[in-house]
Amino acid sequence: GESVGLHLPTLSVQEGDNSIINCAYSNSASDYFIWYKQESGKGPQFIIDIRSNMDKRQGQRVTVLLNKTVKHLSLQIAATQPGDSAVYFCAERSNYQLIWGAGTKLIIKP
Amino acid sequence: DTEVTQTPKHLVMGMTNKKSLKCEQHMGHRAMYWYKQKAKKPPELMFVYSYEKLSINESVPSRFSPECPNSSLLNLHLHALQPEDSALYLCASSPGQGPGGYTFGSGTRLTVV
Image 1 (cartoon, chains in turn blue, brown):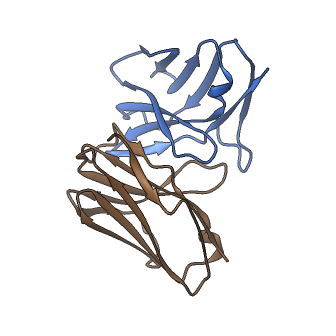
Image 2 (cartoon, chains in turn orange, green):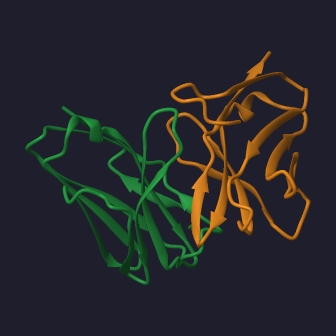
Image 3 (spheres, chains in turn blue, brown):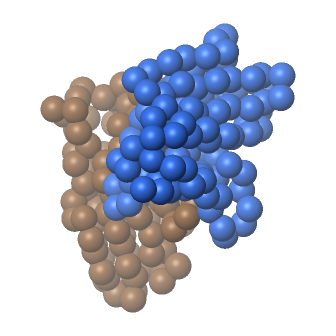
């Protein structure tokens, strides 16, 4: 997802399909990246992280891929479920501070 | 206890009011944060406390005043706010000041009228 002003990028996925949420980060010196999930009315919830010396990391039903050449981060969610509906934020650590991406809203179609 | 608890969940205040937001964690985390989040936007860092001392103030107006009474508590005192300050205010904590391992509270939905 990329910032497009006031409109939050949206991804609609059929229930049971895989979801891929993308993020372009800004600083090639960033050494740590995190994906957060934020459901309506709640605070951001940690999903998965990855350090810059890795290309891929897997969790339960989620995989994060890091391509440092093009400064791109992606979150893959396998077998998407209704409970995955949320806004997903990527964040990069740069100079000991978090820089957040714009967010992507994931909508699950029944 | 693996939670960050924020109170109140909702707050409506007038522009002349004084109110406080509260945040509590019992995970032994030594860094605590206040963030402001507007609708459809990512959280924006306001303040960072590390070992109960204010370490980062992101040029926040003085009508927002943070306080860290002890390692488990973080307050945000509000005075003479403007309608544009209406937002979701999030508290987070982490073991150290580096941003890894953040735990967020559910936030206080603030409306300034």
